[in-house]
Length: 305
Image (tube, rainbow, N blue to C red; front, side, top):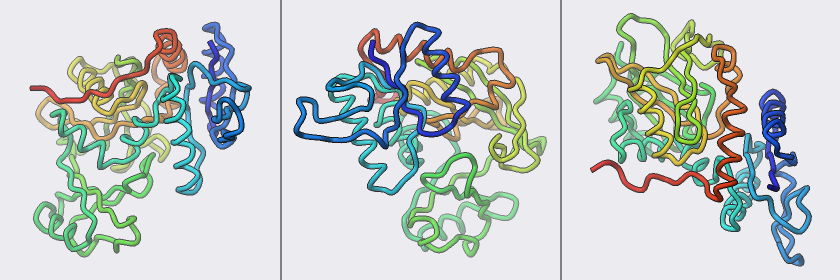
């Protein structure tokens, strides 16, 4: 098999994925999506470094390098072109687009009846202010999240309409989600890693404040997800179409869980500290099996009846 690993940044994850792929018998070729070109004078106009005039059978995508809107569009376009040509891409571009756009993630979760905190997505500040006035109050805030944010960056608690930033500071999109506090007052939520449709590991994330991301100082703690949480994470991954993903959950206060986010380019260095599961090997093994089978993950097209 002709295998590519696209990992533009993140040395820790890249090193482990390269080692896992190699240990499983693959000979991965490391490349950057920033170096993929389109040259129409060749029999195969999509030029992927390291693959000559052909295309890889499979591409394991770890990260997409940051850049302008135009550069990101081109890189996603290259991934779409690979998929159209028969290359198995993990995670595929459609899954990335659905998960990066929190509004689309919330829409898909709702359509598949996957429990998630009540969410409101609006383009105008006056409409967002009306929602805050109706739904929020001191001690019962809404969470304002950047539509394309990650790792807990840019989160704000909003209790009053006047606390909303102007439209130009939020990209003219207000993504508001009901804040779910634990009854015991602890700042704690959960991450479940799903690969090839199966929950393979989980952790508690504990913080000194309400933002618990490990990147922001949260502490990973060992956790064996109960069946109901594992099933919920697996359903969320299927709804968004992610082959491997980190699904974030909170307790709903009634013995169940709510899905907060589905991450298509998850980090797992914190999780790896508290689980015996070799996450990189799970990803590599699932990916190579998909390449051998000749197909990637399928989007769940309809919710439950």
